[in-house]
Image (cartoon, rainbow over all chains, first blue to last red; front, top):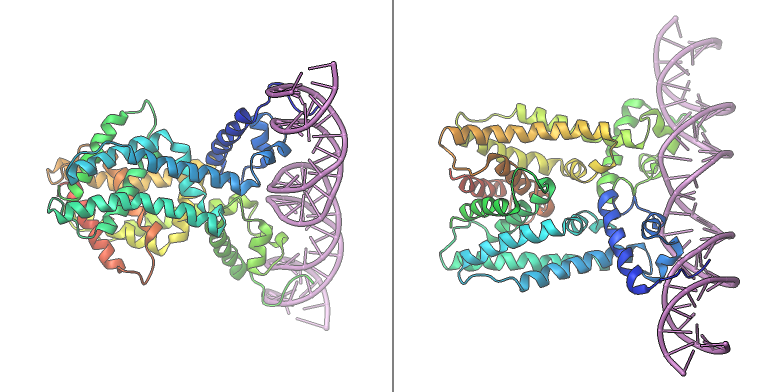
Amino acid sequence: MARKTGSHSEITGPKIRAEAQKLFARHGFAAVSMRQIAAAVGVQAGALYLYTPDKEALLFDLLKTHMEELLAAWAAEPRGTGPAEALEAFVRFHIRFNLIRAEAVFLSYMELRNLGPENFAVIEGLRKAYETELERILQEGQEAGRFLIPDTKLATMAIIAMLTGVNTWFREGGRLSRASVENIYWDMVRKSVGA
Amino acid sequence: MARKTGSHSEITGPKIRAEAQKLFARHGFAAVSMRQIAAAVGVQAGALYLYTPDKEALLFDLLKTHMEELLAAWAAEPRGTGPAEALEAFVRFHIRFNLIRAEAVFLSYMELRNLGPENFAVIEGLRKAYETELERILQEGQEAGRFLIPDTKLATMAIIAMLTGVNTWFREGGRLSRASVENIYWDMVRKSVGA
DNA sequence: TTTGATATTGAACAACTGTTCAGATAACGT
DNA sequence: ACGTTATCTGAACAGTTGTTCAATATCAAA
């Protein structure tokens, strides 16, 4: 056998990325073999190399795509006029988006060390750009006298860590809905910056 | 060659655990081979099996020891009389202890999935016990009317995530000292619970 | 229907994996 | 000094790893 009936790069390509993301998130990058990914896609291992130069590039592609989509989604997100409104928009956006893309978020935090230096730098840059979005909101609120923050850089890291933490415990159909989680976290963040 | 001069289980045992922790934290459990650990210790791979039944047990030992020491250290930590004092003690303790044990903390958050179900349950139980320590503080403060928290379970997860996040960015000799980081985080946590 | 591009197989490669164990050496108690 | 025990080596095991590539089957266009 060689080419399979109904085989198309437009189908196999995305399928490889989807299955790779699922498996990497579940077992970790190093613990997943190319043959496992291929089996999940329904193809032989050799076929994967039509779509990625190597295993690391596959991971890098997933991380880069995720970070770019995160930044694009935030850029398209409607936010209010003042700093408090912008902060609320950020908090709700971050929780909402990260819960939808739970697997990709997990990968972006756990598998960065499997990237070579230059690939690592790219993802790190995108993450930094995202953090800067929040930092600017905090800074503007501070300068406008609407927030009371001892250190905006620290507050940025603290808030992002707090929000991202939702992914570790939230389960669909649990005690709380996504909306009420958003509300509660916004309440805590708002208080923590003195707004 | 066989037994080496000056060889002792009291030396090799801890050395194996130390090198394994370092390597696991740096490259991930699955990405580190027994031969790499052995080489770091200065021994052949076979010798490791005098100290651990298998690779997973080595990881489990590291995680269990860490969690037990964390709980023991918190139990021995002096804390004030009221809820606010206890919360401050917890915040400062968590930041301080986690920065000292950065590698073990990293492992405890990243490599849980490499444990079998029964080992996983043990670590999960210890982690839950630690979280309960914070939750009780929040609950007592809430009942005493000293805190204003919409949901103590969520606040517990939010605060722990926020505090643990320090490990991802803090670098010794950076802009801020450990003490000032403690102060700033305590300020944010205090405000967020309305104390 | 023929032709050329596209997509995939299946076997092969050398290196590496966790783990076991008989044999060898050093340390220790007598 | 001697025998016992503790500690480690080095080779071996069977299986897996990422990656390459000639052969082959399907697809789309002419």
